[in-house]
Amino acid sequence: KDFVRQPLDYYDYIIVGAGTAGSIIASRLSEDVNVTVLLLEEGGDDRGYATVTVPAFCQETWRNPKLVRFYNSEPLPTVYQHLLNGQAQWPRGTVLGGCSSVNNMAYVRGSKHDYDRWAESIKDDGWNYQHVLSYFKKMETVTNPELRDSHYRGLNGPVGVTRSQTVYKLTDVIIDAFRDVGYPYNHDYNAQSMEGVARTQHNVQDGERVSTAKGYIYPALHRHNLHLVIASRVDKVIITDRIARGVQFVQQNLTRSVYAKKEVILSAGTIGTPKLLLLSGVGPREDLKELNISVVSDLPVGHNLQDHLVFDLAVSINQSIGLLPGILNSDWAMAEWNILKKGPLTLADSGVTFHTSTTQQDQLVDWPDVKILFSLSPVATNTLRSFHYSPTLLNQLSVRDNVTNGFTFWPMLMRPESRGILKLRSANPKDDPVIIPNYYTKSKDVETMLRAIHICKKVLQSKPMVDIQASISDVVHLNICSQFVFDSDDYWACAVRARPRTLHHISGTCKMGSKEDITAVVDSQLRVRGIQGLRVADASIMPYIVSANTNAAVIMIGEKASDLIRGESLPPTDLHTSTANIWFLENIFLCTLIVAVVTVLMFK
Ligand SMILES: Cc1cc2nc3c(=O)[nH]c(=O)nc-3n(C[C@H](O)[C@H](O)[C@H](O)COP(=O)(O)OP(=O)(O)OC[C@H]3O[C@@H](n4cnc5c(N)ncnc54)[C@H](O)[C@@H]3O)c2cc1C
Image 1: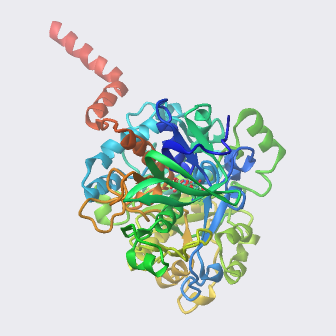
Image 2 (image 1 turned 90 degrees about the horizontal axis):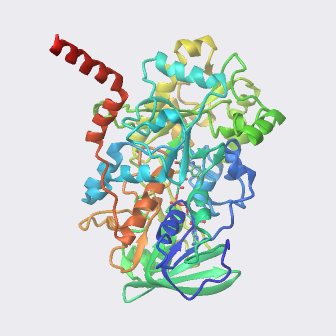
């Protein structure tokens, strides 16, 4: 059995959204044969799409309306002048596996400090790094032998993780360039420290994407106690007497209801979950009253919206060592992937990731606030179109179309201070919500991005970059920034503000917090405040966005939520003892030698 057409009337647990987190929770809860689980998903099957499976084609997925839904922010044409209609556009995976089936697969857990800050703010050590590390280990199977012998890594989890290898010479040149200007090479940014330049790890195993649908749901579909219903949009949580009783959903234009004996769990993502809560009367009282929705619980649902932003800086070089046109569609690349599951098609991106702390305060504790990724070509207008850039900007950046050899820096802001907001547009579930991202409303965010751009420029001065005559190819005086001297900080600040490009990591709209925190929507057990039998588990619960791509954190949230629901917990990882053990194992030869020398000396 794959999908169930019509659910029964009652289940123990109803999970809304078979995305990244929802797939995990359905799979874990249904491990217990004594409970029944219903998983409801608005989208369809993610199998049968080569663009989902083959890592190098991943960017095609988030342009495919069969796999994603596009949400537009409110227009702000005088602010986001480089965006089409002044609107940010967010594709969200609307398919089994959710965004984990359409994302770029970069696997980055985040810093120890991200989770320690969560734990401190919510006053619950169960979310500190030592605790969540146990879940990060549980969920993954690290495939590279050189990474497996580490106390930080997991060896038997449902999600495969593979560290990329050099396919293009440009990858090695970029790594060498960062080292040349003094940054360390980081063997594993998912271990003790994130700092430095590293080879990217991806949710890829045997050359194929591992979404949470693939890792958790498909292997569980044979279970009789798990029902998966697709193409069904949940429109409301049925709440009476402050208890969640079930959900109302629409399937083939028919509205149906299904009931939960134990709990309803919302995993519909950073947009879907708050929208559903608001439609169900859980949200800011004044906003709900305006739409004639009766208020069940007055909570700041939709507030605290956070995202990672990226800027693009194209560079030209004098050698053909990167991703040249035609490589990915060549017969040999296809053959190499089909037969050996190797080669260019296994790479979701350049394979290089750089993290660094750009303030003295962050350096002291080792907590990166900037990340830089790369594209191994000077990203041309064809691709830039999908970033929702305005025709004027596309026209100005079309200089890149004439650059055959080059690459693009993607400097990124990892801990933004600006906060956006999401509200209902109307009480009609078919209407998309109002989204106001408030990008760069805090000047500190612009300052951090400028420091990231400075790092890119510093790297261009390195010997490996000078050797390939690397130089910024976007020497175009953007109309709206023409009052500033090109390449000055004011110029870049103007360009950065005008085109806030999302890294697709929206989070935080149903914030987790302590009892006293009036800005919180869920408590540290992920229970919606003031309502029984209702939890949220997805990217929306993050109190602060992590300093990393968000998928790994959401998988951890899915694993931990499953344990919270079934009343279990993993013991915290004891890093202290184990690091010592690892040191002993890694240096066993040295230890044996010391013992031998001491023994000989004693008997002499
Ligand atoms: C294009 C793109 C690239 C990304 N790249 C990376 C990357 O390289 N690395 C990384 O770590 N992160 C990346 N991310 C972010 C990461 O994938 C997400 O943060 C994470 O997957 C979100 O998981 P979630 O469970 O919160 O939501 P989702 O995975 O979005 O799941 C929500 C699910 O709920 C369903 N749903 C919504 N509303 C309803 C409803 N009313 N009724 C029924 N079902 C509903 C949706 O269809 C979806 O399946 C990327 C995201 C995108 C979109």
